[in-house]
Amino acid sequence: MKEESQDEQSSTEKKIFEAARDVFQSKGLEGARMQEIADKAKINKSMLHYYYRSKEKLFEKVYQLSLIKVIPQIVSLLNEDLPLEQKLLNFTTKYLEIIRANPDIPLFVLHELNKNPTRLKTFMLNEVGRKVQPFLEQLRQEAQKGNTVDLPAEQILVNIMSMMIFPFIGRPVLQVIFEMDEDEFDRFIEERVNLLPEFIVRSTLK
Amino acid sequence: MKEESQDEQSSTEKKIFEAARDVFQSKGLEGARMQEIADKAKINKSMLHYYYRSKEKLFEKVYQLSLIKVIPQIVSLLNEDLPLEQKLLNFTTKYLEIIRANPDIPLFVLHELNKNPTRLKTFMLNEVGRKVQPFLEQLRQEAQKGNTVDLPAEQILVNIMSMMIFPFIGRPVLQVIFEMDEDEFDRFIEERVNLLPEFIVRSTLK
DNA sequence: GTCTATAAGCAGATAGAC
DNA sequence: GTCTATCTGCTTATAGAC
Image (cartoon, rainbow over all chains, first blue to last red; front, side):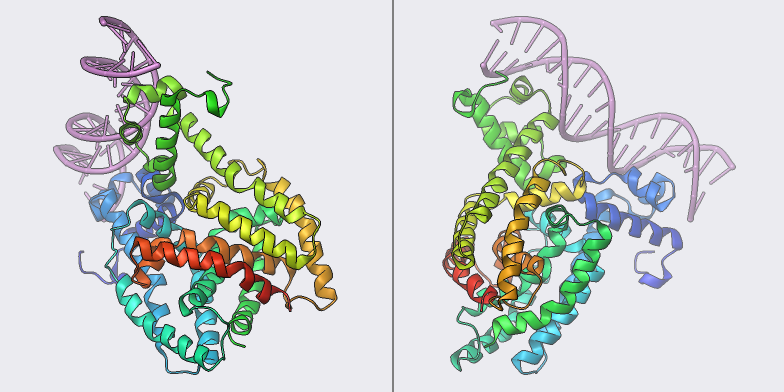
């Protein structure tokens, strides 16, 4: 059972994991109830312990997979050998796809990280740091040629990440402010995903 | 006791509230422990119940005050009768000050809102919605004159909010990616607060 | 592997002395 | 108003039948 890959998991184990993912991502570790996970998976509560031993261990699985889904792919996108404009278009387009497919992960991860900043601090994040450096360097070189907007490279990257990620984190607030129902907000996101890569290029390069 | 204003609160009550604010904002409602709040306030656990009856009630106080601190001031900034450029500079500068003075509020509120989207949905948020409309209208009018970037007004506003708010929510991740310690990140924020209003104007108007 | 019943521990809440 | 001691209920976790 321990070293099984995803596709040879029993259907029960998979159902549990998916229910746990949903509940943990919306309620957080402490807000989640094992009973709610069991109900959502339509199995008995004691099965949770049979497959995952404890709430903490089940959570850890969900948390790590959430990180893996969102972090490493990004990095590779930043390291392809492309001119800045192409790289930016490529990076933002693909990254928006990833977040859109996993819209609950950013808030979930950031909340848990905020409660416990040491948890996984060294997991893969500083590896990300190393890989981001070349991209920042590329930004600086273009800046010297006068090709980018006049901001430090780090600030530019934060602008880009902000505009991509925040709408998913802030959804409940934005939806009320703009008086949108679920469908309307989904269309708003659709529109954003279409317009943003182009806008990011325009507002970064000059 | 019930209807006391802030400044006639007993010192104990105040200490409790401030400790509760810190703990709730970093751990969330369910992650917070009454014992931890008591320890941080350096008082006995039963005092919490003496002053606030229950965890839930204490939380509600903290939550509402958090919302009040961050939301209404913003709105007024958007309704002053100023040309767009002035309004943008004014709004972003002041709003960044507010968040900077309350950096934990956005993640806290968004996490709680995510767990319980109905809580306070109608509190003051749709009032905000009404007051944001004139600003969106102003954006649209400038767009017709060809004075703004070519994006729907709502997308522009989301860009602005994203760039202001996200760095505070994403702090733990950004700090690791950029390999910054606390002081370095504080300086990064300082730099950002100085550069961002100007950049937002430049990337919104043309 | 799946269920029912139950144990064990913890955190919020209260009683009551001072 | 503040403390110590205690209760109660909920939630995780386990035992054991099938």
